[in-house]
Structures are given as C-alpha cells and as structure tokens.
Length: 287
Ligand SMILES: Nc1ncnc2c1ncn2[C@@H]1O[C@H](COP(=O)(O)OP(=O)(O)OP(=O)(O)O)[C@@H](O)[C@H]1O
Ligand SMILES: CC(C)(CO)[C@@H](O)C(=O)[O-]
Ligand code: BAL
Image 1 (cartoon, rainbow, N blue to C red):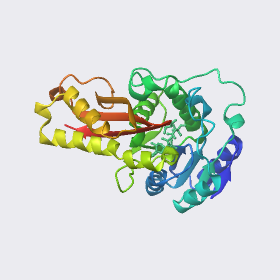
Image 2: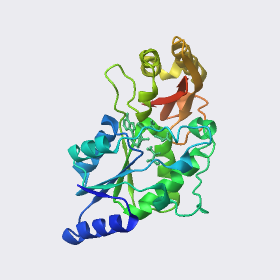
Image 3: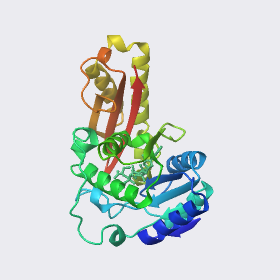
C-alpha cells in the first residue's frame, strides 16, 4: 500500500497503475479518518468492484462551522493505515491542509435545494465545504466509482446532484449503514460519548426502527407528522438527548412529503445532541 501526501505523487501513482492495466477501474473512498468498520465496508465494496482502490484521509476545515469540532476531531494515522491495509487499499492519500488549500479558495461548489433542510439547515455552509472538497478530490483522483455511506444520506443526495449537474464522469455508489451490535450507527464521533451518553444513544436507532414498523403496518393510514411524533417521543425517553431535528422527507429530493400515497421513497432523518456530541442517523423506506 502506497501512502502519499502530495497531489502530484498521487496523480503519478494512479497514472502508473493505469499504464500497467489500461482497463483498470479506479475506486475511491473519501474519508476524514479515525476509521472504523463503516469505512472498512466502503473500502471492501470498492475492492470488490474495482482494480485500484484509493482512500483519502483529510479533515476538511471548509466543512466545519466556527463553533464545531475541527480542532478536536479524532485522528489516529497509524491505526487508520493498519485498517486501510487490512481492507485491501492500494493507495492512501493523506494531504495536509496546505496541500489542498495552498491559498484561500475562491471557488465554492454550492448545491441548492437538497441542502436546504436537515444538516444543511443546522450546519450553515457545511455542504458547500463538502461539495467543494469532494469536487476537488474527484478531479484529483478521477475515479470510475466513488463510495459513500448512507449514514450521511444527505451527503449522498448532495454529491449525486453535483455529479449530475456538473457532468462529472464518476459513478456514485451508496453503501449501507454499519451499526454497533446495539444498533448505534458507527461514527468517528462516537468516541466523544460518555458511558452514560453512549448507553442512551441507542434511542436513535430504536426510534427509527419504530418508524420502520409503523410503515410496515401500513403507510396509507399514517402521516409524516404522526411518524415524526413517534420518533421524537422515543428519543425523548433518553434524558440526555437534545433533538436537533427529526424530519420525514422525500428521498433523494429531500423535500417535504404531503401524503405517503404520492411518494415512492421517504427518509426518516434524525440529528440528536448528547452534550457537545451531535449524532445523525436515518432510515430510507420504500413505500
Ligand atoms: N456507520 C457507517 N456505515 C457506513 N458508512 C459510514 C458509516 N460511518 C461513516 N460512513 C461513511 O464513511 C465516509 C467517511 O465518513 P467520515 O470519515 O465522516 O466518518 P464518520 O464516522 O461519519 O465521521 P463523523 O463522526 O464525522 O460522522 C462517508 O461516506 C460516511 O458516510
Ligand atoms: C466526504 C467527506 C470525506 C468530505 O470531506 C466527508 O464529508 C465525510 O467524511 O463524510
Ligand atoms: N460525515 C460527515 C462529515 C462531517 O460531519 O463533517
């Protein structure tokens, strides 16, 4: 496995791999590091579908708000490289901030409408930062396929819209959410939780499970506000949970649903704070 920190070295390595096999399919997994089984599942999906697997680890300052956790975001390069190697990665791109942003960027990629709700509303500017860095990374790596986790379902919708609108020649592959045995979605930020918060964080997945069961019992005789209330009531059973949002929207447009009779696919999306730690989770349900 090659570990590279400059854009020129990375481009040379990908060119060399393509010289060796001109038909090589390049798979790309962008991350912010502190890798866990969720990231490993993306690398394994890339390994299964592609000949060359490229992983990027970059904590992107552009997507963090002024009062967010950029400085304290967990980092562990040695552990990340061991996990990446085990998952079959060929090339790891580990740039410093100065390599990605040698000067203040004057070009921002801003995706409209799909960013107006959920994390787009709670974290102003966040998706401009994500779309800009993902656009840069896609231009640098030029993969055939790029793999993203559905834990960040709005991010998947944003990137799919960007790739469509800007005619980027890459296939976006959404991958399922990997969970802890008790249901909590794996996330680098889970390490911030105190033991008490960790125990209570299980309400997110339990609340989404309740929503799933409600749809299974019959989508025709429920409403978005009833599902929202069901989910909020379950989350409020955790005394330390502070709800940021609970929303039921059409997926992937992320626009409001008036009645389930008119929708094929909806997302029940939640963001909940435990102390300073903000967790997100969702269920995408076909009706
Ligand atoms: N539990 C998971 N299952 C599947 N994919 C995941 C999971 N967690 C993260 N990913 C995916 O890994 C990629 C990189 O995400 P990132 O490095 O931000 O990890 P994270 O654990 O989501 O961190 P954070 O704590 O910032 O939410 C994204 O496409 C993300 O959706
Ligand atoms: C896609 C991404 C690597 C861009 O910084 C980040 O938003 C993430 O880890 O999901
Ligand atoms: N996984 C999304 C990256 C972020 O929270 O900034």
